[in-house]
Length: 229
Image 1: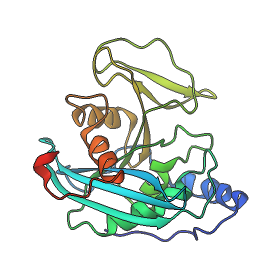
Image 2: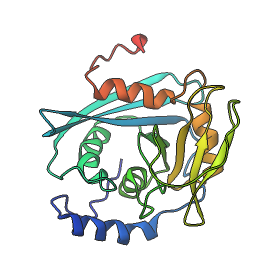
Image 3: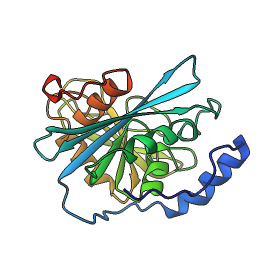
């Protein structure tokens, strides 16, 4: 996997915002796939040692059958402070280290976080997508920005998430009569396609299988016995 080193990670808050403002112009909001999608990956992070260490988990699944094919764990010092809107500067370094360990390159990465549903249109999924030059999707469990209309109760119902007159994502009902999730473009994918892949990766539960498995990995499930998943 090719990973671009576009900036240092030891930055001030002002410098980090400048990086976001610079790189956001490179985000591609239409479908740009190099190959047919055979593998999807989920990435998630957990914090250890009182916020000093970030542990990243990556799960690669076959698509569309969603069988676990590979997992990876990596650790990285968490040097950047906790600042809403700049969380990728704390978390992306560990994710990059976990991605480097993979022998199977995913075709899409589903991120536990925001994409362009972000005040500067450059959330975690955008940041990661630019650095790995790969289609990425933001799949967040909670609201960050934007307004939306009343959402239907059936699986697949969605409402545009609008911020300052711009559609930045979607409120999506991934399962009927359950709490919705927030989907947004990360990089090299359109919003309708992102919604479609999230639904296909979430056949049974509220969260996509990619997110569920990477969450368990990041929180300490280091086993490579994929049958347990």
